Length: 470
Image 1: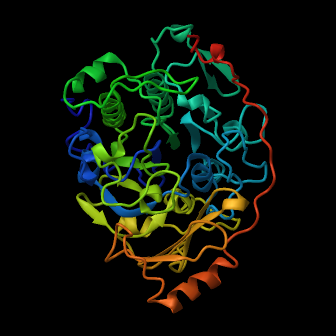
Image 2: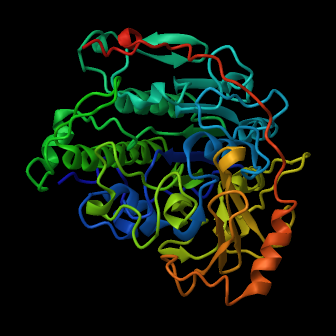
Image 3: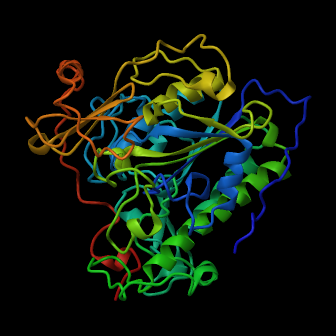
């Protein structure tokens, strides 16, 4: 199958180059489950470059997304606030961050970082205060509205505040696969900023459906899997893909190849000694839409999937790589989350946080050091929520205890994750004091979200603007 294209097997360490302010690359893919990578137990999908990152860095077994769906999870990442406090809690794709929100990009600009995002934003459509260029990013290329990001052959992407046309996708043509276009632009950003400190946020859309991939990747898996009955999409704006398992696996492996290319570029530019690379997912693996979660064991031993607050919806891969600073072949069971990323990157970059956040820096774990400086006391609770007020779902982790509430007023389910990672044994009746402690916390865990009705997406229905004229 695909080799580790472009990825390094040894690190080019330059001891004369300062490592006080590292370049930061944060890769977040879309709907990749806890079990979809080889380094997390995957047996059918090939991810050699990401597996190599894990072998040369630190793999976390208890890292969590900020929410079980896309936009709220991205909002927790950007703002450092958990899903009971962050600005964007709707998954409409058009709810924007607020002008007063302070993002990772804004924090990193303080110590002089050049900031770029290439991929899927989902936190503010064109014309709103939520667009990346109004939230601290110097350069943006990709999708603004998350529903636009459902398509891999649209007629245009956004370059900052202008439409960037993809004429190879006009009408029914499929010549410019956006995964490839976005990767090339991200690599151009690295080349252009190689002499400066940069923050590259790379939120890939893979492997979110639609299930489409160019033939060179599709053919790597062709005939490898027994396919279910031919899949025909019922979505008005989603292209048909009759071989969903093949397409899904090929999409992930192509994305892995692109990560290998980026890592190879760091070596070529002699940036690999002073760049920290993170890899994670925005939420757990989904099912349906042609994605066969059970066939690929996409969430591993975890219960549930995207959209749910069981572990399968929120526990995701996290890998951190920084040669010479992060020891190789490290596996950590440290519990941290998307909302911890902002204070973590701030500490690594030497930036100050002058506003309140829910997150706690994990820099000491990455570097194998004692807690100092910005690192607060370990938090007692981790909190997640999802849904609307009338069907609000909540989850809390307290040490090894995990509580889940499926709807307002429902009794808490209680699981002991160190003994029951699959959340099969509800222990609420046996441990009423644990339930009460969590119930007491829930009384003040959240604030009501703002009321906001998104405008219709600027990229537009019907499909002629996306390139899907059937």
